[in-house]
Each structure stands twice: as structure tokens, then as C-alpha cells.
Amino acid sequence: MAIVATTHSPGRARRIGLWALPAYGALLGLSTVTHQPSVDDFDAYARYVTTDVFLASHLGASIFGAALAILGAFAVSAFLAGGRAARVAVAGVVLTTVTNVFMASTFGSAAFVQPGLGRAHLAGVEGMPAINADTAYGPAFFAVALTSTVFLIVAAVVLGVAIARTDRRLRWYGIGYPALMAAFAFSGFFLQPAQASAGFAFAVLTAGLAVRLPQVIGHD
Image (cartoon, rainbow, N blue to C red; front, top):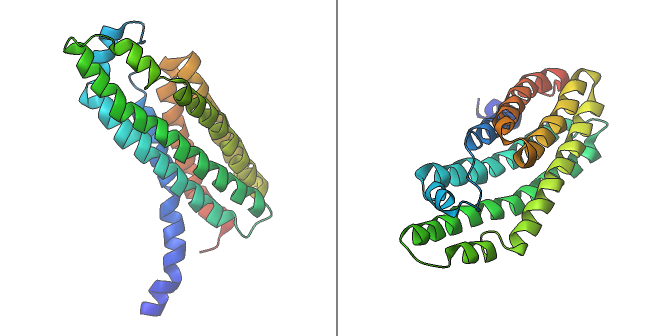
């Protein structure tokens, strides 16, 4: 019995790992239901970044969500490893991993720097907007945040191509995966009210993928 359990455990782990992606999508949606005010209204900005919702969103949704994205991508690649798009899948996993590590660093900056600056401002300490612009929103932050956002989309495109190439029955999942990730990323800059919907749509799509992929590949 122990041998049977050991034999089937890798397949079970792959199937469970696929559900990290819908969880990631749900967290993307939840973390963007509200958005912080512009730093131009620093009083409102300071009040928002000092809330428990802001901290929980960055620690529980953004940073933990990045970990789920990596785990989910690994699970997908484990199913695709024996197919004709194996090399593309590996490239997608590598890009997903590196990108989310860098992106998590920007969320960490927000989680640990912005609340302190906001509390200082609300307590009457002068000069916080300038310090905020030099630290929480400094050039290094913007360089990492914008670059990792671009590569987040690139990683999704590469992994989506691997999914679509593996089997025609997975084609629409392969197309929808990067399309919804791009919609989520771009809406954060240009259409914030739609960002949460894009995250939840990504959760629905990848839930379907988590069900369909094991059926199509049939490894287990």
C-alpha cells in the first residue's frame, strides 16, 4: 500500500498544484477591489496606506499571490513536460518565477515603507511627501515595477503558447491565460475599476484549466 501511495503522489501533487493559479487569480481580484488614492492628495493617500486592508492586501494577496503564481506555473509545466511544447513550458516557468520574485519586492516596499510614511504624515511630521517620492516611489521602484509588469505579461504569453501548442483542446486556455493577465496589468494603469474583474476572470479561466489539463494530458 505504501508503494501505491508513493507512486500516485506526484500526480496528485500536480493536480493540486494547478489550483494555485485560480487562488492566485482570486487574490488578484480581491487585492484590487479598492485602489489607493493618488499621492497628489497625500492626506487621503496616507490614510489609505495605513489601513489594515492595505497591509493585508500586499502581504496576503500580492506577495503570497506571487508565490502561488510560481507554484501554479510549475504544476502546469509538470503536465506539459512530456509534450511537444515542453521547452516552451520550461521557459514560461523560468520567466514566471524570476518576474514574480522581482514583483514581490515592489509589493514588499509598499507593505513596509508606505504605512510608516503615512503614519508619520498623519502625526504631523513634515516632508513625508518628498521622502515618499524618493523611497516608496523612487526611480529604482519604478524601474523594477514597470519592468516586472512587462515581463509578467511576457511570461504569461510564453506559458500560454505552451498550453495552446500541447493540444488543440487546450487552445482557448492558452489564449485566455495571457490575454487576461495583460488585461489585469494594463487596467491597473488605464482602467482601474475593471482590474478586479480581470483578476476574477483569470481565476475562472485557470480553474477550468485545472480541471481540463489532467483530462487532456492523461498522465495520472
